[in-house]
Image 1: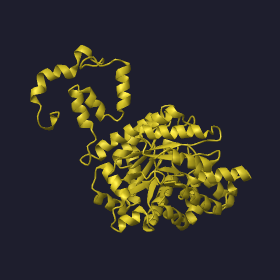
Image 2: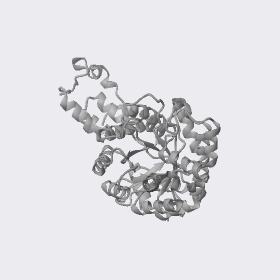
Image 3: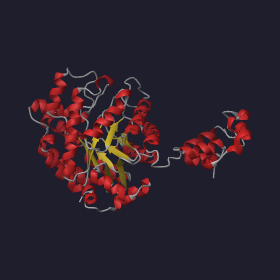
Image 4: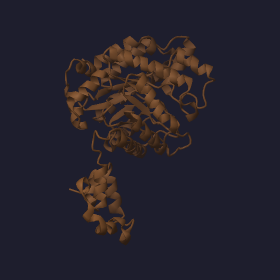
Length: 435
C-alpha cells in the first residue's frame, strides 16, 4: 500500500511518525493530511529517510544536479550531491542528460540519504537521439519500461510531463508562441514528438498505466510543468493555465487511484502574480502539494539569479507553496559547480524560512524571537545556536576577529544594544525576558 492508502485506512505509518516527530506536529493530524492528499511522504528507499511535503509542514528545498552533453563527470555530480545534502537540501533531483544514465542514477541514489527524484523523459529522449538521431523516434513502450526501471532503482519522486498535450499545444500556437520560448527540456522534446508523429502525448493518453507503475513503488508523481513560463511576460498565459488545469485534473485522478501526487509550478513569474499562481494551483488541485520551480520574478538577474529566485521563493512559501526548487548563481549561464550548489541551497533555505515565518506563525517556533533576544543581550554563543547557518556565521566572526568582549566591530564603543541596556534592562517582562 502507498502512504496515501495507508493513511486512508487509518494507519499511522512509521514514515508518518518520523515526519511528525521531525516537524513537531501530532501524528494523527499528519495522517489526516496525508489521507486527503494535502501532504505527501517522499521516501528514500536507500536510507529510509522520509520527507513530508505539504500544508502545515515546513517549506522544503530541492537541489538539482546532473550531467549535460558538454560537462559529463559522475564524480563531479556526486560531490555536488553530497554538498547539497550537507548544505541542508531536503530532496535532490538527478537530472543527468548525458553519459551512462543508469549508472549515474544508481550511484547518486546511493551517495546521499535524501529522497532522489528525476525526469524520465531526459533519459528516454537522450537514448533515442543517441540511437536514431531523432527524438520523434521515441517508442512509448520503451518509455514506460524505463519509468519502471527507474522506480525500481529507488527514484522517490518523478517529474512527469503529462499536461503538455495536443490541447495545450494548440493554445501555445493560437497565442502566437511566447517571448521566452519553451524552457522545459522534457516539454520541448515531447512537443516535437507530438508534432512530428501527429499523436497524443503517451504519458497523458496512458495515464492509468503510468499511475499503476508509480503506485507499485510508492514513487510520488510530480506533475511536470512542461509549459512553464521562461519569461515574466509569458506568466499566466493561456498555454500555462491550460496545462495547469489538466495537471490539476490528473492530480485528482492520481489521488483517487491511491497514488501520491504533487503539482509543479511556473518558473518566471512577476512579483504580483506569485501568490495568484500558488492559490490557483492549490484551489484547482484540491490542495495538492505545490512544487515551485524558483520562481524568478525578473529575467535580467544572471549571474545573481539565486537572489532573484530567493525573492520569489519567500513570497511563494508565504502564499502556501510546499517545495521550492533552488536556483544557483549559474542559472541561465552554465552547469552549476560545487560552490554554486551550496550557495543555491542556502539562498533557498533562507528564502523559504522568510515565508514560513508567516505561513507557520502559531504552528512552530522558528527561532527568530530567540535569536533576537540573544542578540539584544549580546550572548554570541546562544545567537549562533538559533541561526540557519551557524558555522558560516562563526567563521566570519573568527576570521575578522570581530567580537571584542561583548561588542562586535560593526558598532564598537557605540554599541546601540549595550548603551540601551543601561536604561531599559529593568523594564523587561514576560517572554521578553531571556532564559
